[in-house]
Image 1 (cartoon, rainbow, N blue to C red):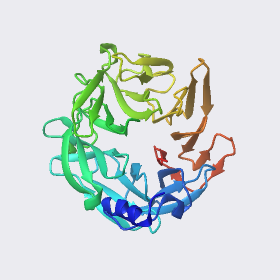
Image 2: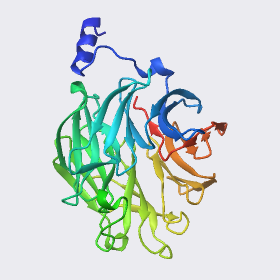
Image 3: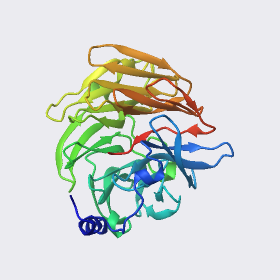
Image 4: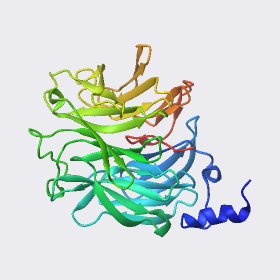
Length: 353
């Protein structure tokens, strides 16, 4: 058993005296941003049963968050093309730090911590070069930016740490944007989406580029199983009459992805909002708020469709999935729905551990 001195030394190595852990804020399993009835925005912690464990105010609409693996601290990202992110103390609601993207960069709304919580990685746009980068932030130095490296593509959106703890997977959506034109997509005729696997130092280990037929499919969100299967959700940027799959699975050791046709452009209105995969990798689920539905795919070939108005957030829990909707509903696998007087935003983020 570790001595108290060694525990304190480990905490100080992360740049802090002992801070609140997740048990100190009600043992939440998930975090999610939401809009309140008065029009303000907050970041919430949710238990496995869908109850609110804590809440922290946000200055504007959030998108996703990154939960620190060890302490009750979360980084809330502005909706793209935002230039700031807030580090929140989830016990007090205090802002511990504010991340500002460097000149010529903006955030894409997602980030991921290293396994030990010492580094934060953020997806960003180098908009003058039209290329994606991953920013690197030192947690011990109050989230000081210490570097960046190429994301391996254009328009990086989501980013996840792989189970080996040494590799990042990045969803390069392929879409070029510039702050001068807001969210306007500048390169649709030539866009190309990819999954990049990068070392924590930025070395490109492998890169899966979508087949030519999917040139206008933008990989947006990711989920990773315990064995390393990467599930990815896409958003179609072309004619909705062309019915292509929007859901894919990829194994890093293979070149080609496996595309699952039932979650298609036509059935999901060209848009998947969020994705989750079970730890075993046997089940994967996606949501589309545009059609008010979620789809769950099982390894045995079974497909289950769940109708729910404005459903978008989803995360794995045991052998099932938890879903959230803009109506304020939280749906645990038990089926016992919980309603809250908020409008849940796009993503439900699982806290590591």
